Amino acid sequence: MESTDNKQYTRRSKSLAFLLRHDNTYVFYEHGYREVRDLVANHGFTLDELREIVKTDDKGRYEFLDEQQLFIRARYGHSVKVDVELPEAVPPAVLYHGTAKRFVDSIRQQGIKKMRRLYVHLSEKEEDALKVGQRHGEPIALIIDARQMSDDGIKFLLSRNGIWMTDYVAPKYIHG
Image (cartoon, rainbow, N blue to C red; front, top):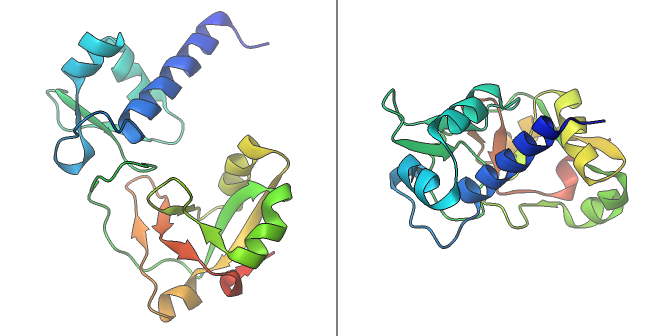
């Protein structure tokens, strides 16, 4: 059973994820940064708590702007329009998309859509994709022919922590 401290940490981390990725009431600074001062004054975070979440997040989702730690952002996963400076990159031959098995038939027909996010997220490792898929039910990692997508002129972006992103994955590129 999860301890009370772990439950509290998880709840606060999810709250931070919302505030940095999906809060359409906030006007984000350049490149998706949010003032730490706002999170402390208006959302009950402490600087130490934010430091701990940035340091211990298993996917490296968050970062401070600099050593002063006056601004913080999520590196990817936004539904609000922000430019988090993702460089365009040539992907490896194969990437993986984690989802729940119950969505596979729909994905095979319609492709992988970004839904409420700005991009479709893809992983280099099958096990990472399976972890993502398990959040939605019985997981499956779909194999994506990223080389062919790239050869066909489809653009990929790469986050600093290794998450690949694109606008859409058509059914013809999905295997597995």
